[in-house]
Length: 305
Image 1 (cartoon, rainbow, N blue to C red):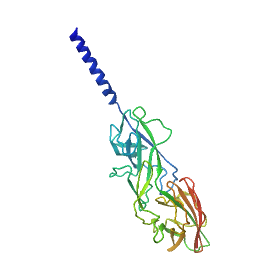
Image 2: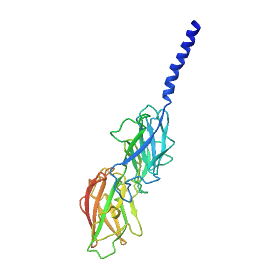
Image 3: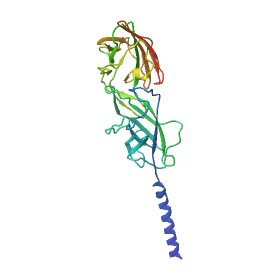
């Protein structure tokens, strides 16, 4: 009897020890959906992710810098293929709730989610995001996450027309730059994809878009379609320090026109700043700037002479 009792105790004890291990090994594959906050359909900023688009994912139990217990899954690749996101490696979820931090576009060398390089020289629509509000906890029982992506940069959008101007009206370059000895336009920063904060890195090159064959050719009607707008993305500017400390430069038919941004102008992250531009004889004019959350915005009218 003593021997049988010992055997039963031993058998029962093994089952009790093994049971938590068996449960902890149960996992489910993470599935990703995305939505983009306030994105217009235009040729520069994205309105939807195209086939082949790539996100970088950092899967955490809560905060940037924390490793998911059965990971780590740091800078995992999510590639958009045939209407769905395919993950490499496939992320496995346990009972631990997961907070996923994402950035776009994917770069293989990223190791720190709090320090993702972003530039204006390439005019890329950098984005960052995490679990969208209102969804259930993401874990093995609910492995589907919806990521809400936000714009890291600020968009300047130009609607340009001509009036009483005899030339062809071919706009080949739009540029935003600092006045001499001013450093408000920054061309390189490090993005924290958890908070959206940018650590500026002391480079102050102009941001520009250019096409020798013409970005657009002006007509006497203000354009209304996105494909006829000119878009330029910059790192956010908290506030211009003086009239003209930041200015715009337009090249139309080989001639250069300037517009000096007023003092205290702000270009916030994720906002669209619309300029209604008129080339009038030889002068370019802009009205008040309209700022939006990348859906609508402050509208500025500007005349070029």
